[in-house]
Image (cartoon, rainbow over all chains, first blue to last red; front, top):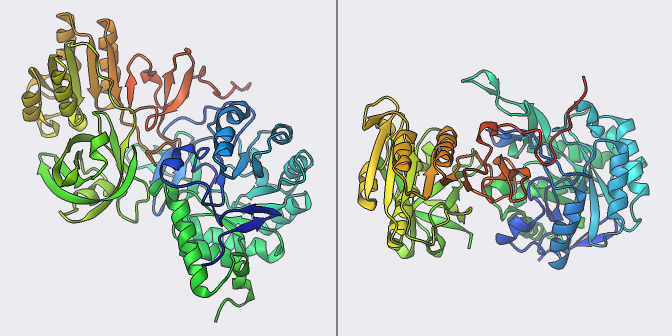
Length: 310
Length: 279
């Protein structure tokens, strides 16, 4: 059996599959369906400084092999998260990867400073790419300068033992360029990819379906785009760990991401279809790695760039 | 306890505009209370689960659940095309069920369309506690009316309304409700159906000093509390409005707590609502 353990930027995790931010709340609800300590960890829904109501409904529309969402970062705020959610994960020895989101560079810095005194935080995912914000100008991941400023501030305000992952948007001309900028600004790893911006019109009313008008497209529909992004980022940063995600439904899907250059994967939208999907995907992935004769996950990372297996 | 399971379809039976679907649910049926719902995975092309309120639980096949399906979209059409022996993936029981009164009080149950589904078992359990039960069954027209015969079997009186008068009394389900409550003595109102009906039921109940428990129909992606799509504005015990999940905080809410007129919006005084912007 391939060894399930992986190391991301110096931190060891129990397995190569994680939940994806925004698809697992803060983990508690999924614990009814599988043992959260068996997977790599829980990537929490993005936490902001203050409580946030999110956008009006309808917030979701099903699309071919996917869905659009416009939740708008609904959440309790960092204080309540630290009082209720993080201790719940810590008490159960669930690896917590805390996703943070802000409206300004300073808000990200403040969030990082607050998390500094929390030993339960195993890694931080910096969500600079949520498409559901009031102004698209706030999508930091669409601009080299903005992305660099956020990552630089989070890195300098975070304990050096805690890696930070920049979550990238596919809605850019060159994802490799943004990835390089984030790396140069101090990112230890990259989460690839967030949802891509989409929209649906109700053909009865001829109005946008979503309350937020536009939304993030996710699910198997975006998987090829995500694999391509992982490939391109790994090409320019072969030594930087990538957490790959985008429509992963099976172990074979996950293997595509690993072969393209991801060191681990997040299972997101498919958790809505099957709440036990993160663990199922991990088991299927490990079985496949085993069948190919890989002793560790790391042995298969980026193998598609090296001619694959014959 | 909530369980995810592959369940064998036992029967799919057409019932007017609706379908009655029964599936084996060993270990799940025992935990069922009226108001609970089930989330069912459909075909591969549609990744989101479909949520249905549970109509009844039986001891058949070591435990079985029944739901009512209105085939209005591709997922529900796929579901009603299943045949006995087919396997569907289900998660149940989900949500917070109806609260039952501790005293044997007179109760009114209001169902709109196939929203009547969870009310039969509720009526049965209420009567077992000594409550008298009247049921109002309403729908747009006779074709979409569901469960009148079953309602008569499990209650003390049934009132039927249709918007167009094609069956029963012409009008809204709240018309008989208003008369029943005006006669006095009814403490508990239960309702399940479309949002406008639940809003009207809550309002009529409040006018007569009663609190309605309403099972809402909000569209959901996951049904288990992780996707945050099925939210609506609800006033908490502390008087603060929050966008709460109808899957885990509901689907049953006290009617006087839901800000019905503002469902589909984020009221400005909601916790964490966006700051008003200048210009």
